[in-house]
Image 1 (tube, helix red, strand yellow):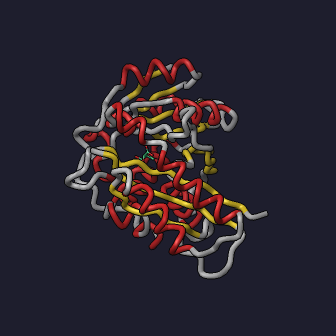
Image 2: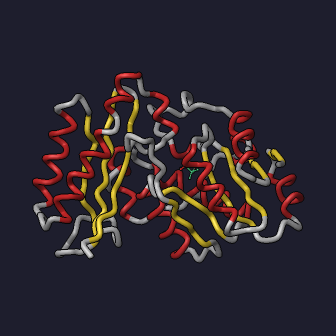
Image 3: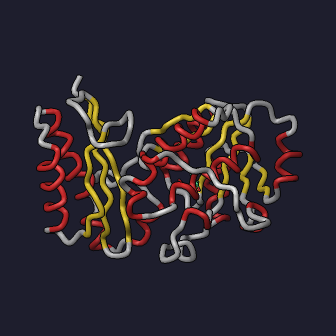
Length: 277
Ligand code: PAF
């Protein structure tokens, strides 16, 4: 496996690499990321993973500086799952001059997490567009845990005609249901024991929807109350149309239930897709 930090060296390495499958990450890798790399294997001859903590997608008071940088551990894990190339550029390599050209994502970017993290998804779409131009993959794999991110990247690729196939990978969970996330590392022992409640609360909403309850406002409010009564600070629990990521405008048979809430210093997100078929 090659560890590369410049765009020029990556170009040279990939010149005769054939079809490239790509997994963009911010590092501090867990089993969920490694699953994305395994999945990427099926979509290309050369698998490239990027490790880059992108300053553009963090707000001024967010955890950009605290975000764990663990490149050597990440490389050891990536090598074990058969990654061919790790692209780990510096901030200056990615942004040699202030980034003035940005990708403006569609209005769904201002909903859900976007309402609490202004500009976050513009930072994500901009860096992903740059990475796609640098790596030139035929396919790129993203986790469904970041459901809104995946939705917006699919929109960008479709509307800007990027020749990249986007593959969505199922969320990997701990045995107690907690979705794996680099930010789980911010949880204390007691918070870690409490953390699976988010998935359970979303699961209750999903169960009610499957049983025919479509009182969206009440279902969302019940889930928020349940979390708040156990010490969570809830950003949102929301039932959305997976086709638009907007609140359902008519009776549907497909939903996605999404939630974001804080336990101490950790902001956790999760979601469940619901099909009434
Ligand atoms: O999901 C992430 O880790 C990041 O948002 C991504 C897609 C690597 C862009 O920085």
